[in-house]
Amino acid sequence: MNKDQVIKIIQRWVKQDLKPEDYQQFENLGSACLAEGESEQLLKFIQDEKHQTMVKSLGCVLLAPLLNEVVKKAASLDHCQAAVTHLARVGTCRPNELLHSMLELVEGIDPGAISETILALLPHLQTALLRLDEGRAACVGSALRALQEQLSRLPVPYTEQQEEADEHGLCRCCAALTAFTKPFVEELKRKDGNTTAEDEELRTELLKFCMRSLREPLLEAELNPDRKSPLWLFAVEIMVTLPAIREPLSGLLFFSSLRKNTPMDSSQFKEARACLAYLLFVQLITIDSFPAVFSHVFILQCNMDYINQLLSRYAANTKYYEHALFTTTLKRVQDSSLPVSLLDLRSFCRSVCSLVSGVKLVSVIRCMLKTSNHAGVESYIIKNIRNQFEFSTKQGNDTERFLGAELISLLRLVLCLPQGADTDLLSSMDRVMESLNLLRYVLIRDKELRTNVWEELCRLKDEYIKMLRVCIGISRAYYSSELKALREDQKLKARVKGLSLKHEKVSSMSPEVQQQVLQSALVTFDLMESLIVRIEEITEEKLNKLN
Image (cartoon, rainbow, N blue to C red; front, side, top):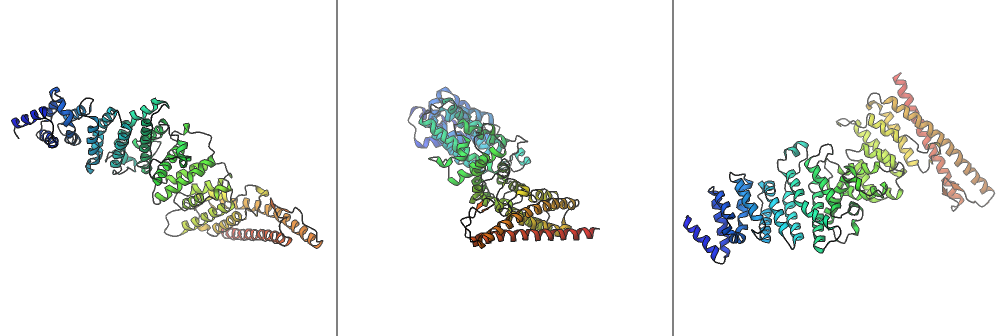
């Protein structure tokens, strides 16, 4: 097509109504100009005041070829950027048509140029949205959803080197998204509670954006507070945005079941809130503004659902957000204060079993032994220590974490009686028996222990057994006297009144059942004593060999 033909076509567009095929022809002409290196001429044409009516109607179709030149960083880059800026400004293209064209560009992005296209488009997309007078909230939501859908195709950097290189541009796009949403967040903040239905819709769309960001990429990112990486800064912005749009973190974490509508699929919503809990309680982002009214036990209980969600999603993941969330919230619970009702929760038990059998389990075991007040749970954990010790001693296993200092640190927690001589041995029977079995097994397999561990092991053993024998003696004397009194009462055929067994009222039992309970207690003490004797024999044999 020669120059005269082009001029005739343009004159027709100025004088006559436009036809559907004119849009394609206008795009073809613009693309031809760019292909021939005439970007400056195209820019002048678009900016010419005589052509503004035509550009207002047809200009949107030039966005795709112009942005392609920008993405390619061609020699015409400056001219093309100026042209796109002109098309997006007030009074040029119609904002609805402009927005529609931009969303089509986002949805049809070349997989090899996702980040480049988004970075080039975002400032102009923001301008187009700010020009809208009606339906802005829905359009903001559509734009954010389309952008995040494309960004989800980019791999998340897992190492510091990958994040610094940002080969695929995800980090730069996250920073650009923060700047993109800023004016809409500020718009809601200025309302100060006097909101319209449109404002509430915008708030909902921004909430959806934040929750999608938490789930992806932040749930997959390697976040380190010691280095303020782009993804760390993005996480901070998301955590700051939620309260800014009047979405309290406590409401999202603890009372989401009361919401009439959830911003996304229930499973995805829980994953997003799991990441929110991790950023708040582990990374301590915005923790200063979190209400202090919630008890640590309540926070732990609520977090168990999120921990289970992370375990189910990241069973083979190496980041262990679930481990960090569990141990951090558990450490804040006062020692020996976990209520039995929490320990009996299915979600709690399932999480503990999964975490204790995971790789990073020493700190989990330590936390559970310190905070648990449940002999059954503690005996399970102690049994797991024995299993891990046995695993570490087998040939071919390259882990020795249960053969040295870490084993001793755990034994200090295992080989103790929290109430000393006043410990109720019957209620603590499971823990005490498992502790003695662990001690016996470790002493038998002492050859696998690291150097300098034997002496500390013997010291812990002596202190524990000394206190345990005192406790057994006191308990045996008590239950023996109760059994003797019961038998005397039976001989006298007197009615048993108010017989008590260490906080357990047994007066409702028949005399025969009471006698069985008391005899079982004495048998239990004999079993403990026999294990102690065996442990002493093993120790003596080992010492004789050393001498």
